[in-house]
Image (cartoon, rainbow, N blue to C red; front, side, top):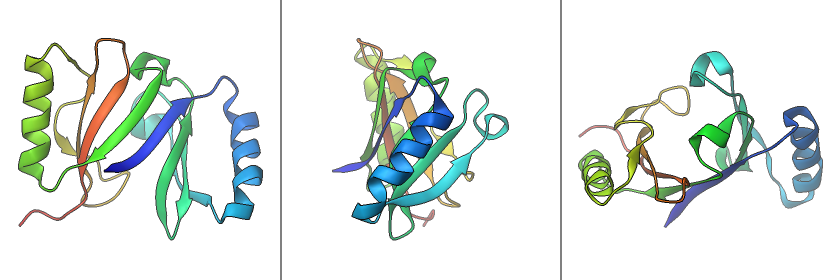
Length: 129
């Protein structure tokens, strides 16, 4: 199941204004804003319904891959296994398994670049048992 998707935009302020306005009739609103200080290299907005970001736009993500897709993992162990399997299959590290509390207190994810440079993530939002 897809948790969320994201992509890079050329003009972050212009694109953010566009998506906020265009998606408002669908009930999508900005849920999370992240800064360059939090991510290390880019700013981004997560838009979504019911307090959950489902569509991310950001700048500076070209280095992270032209497209970003996050897939639901049922456990943190599954995130770890995804990461190891993806690297063994030829993927490149784009962020090892770990907590990303700037997204959500229990957000545990891992990122790899596929052979075409797309940023593929596995994420578990459940607290550690």
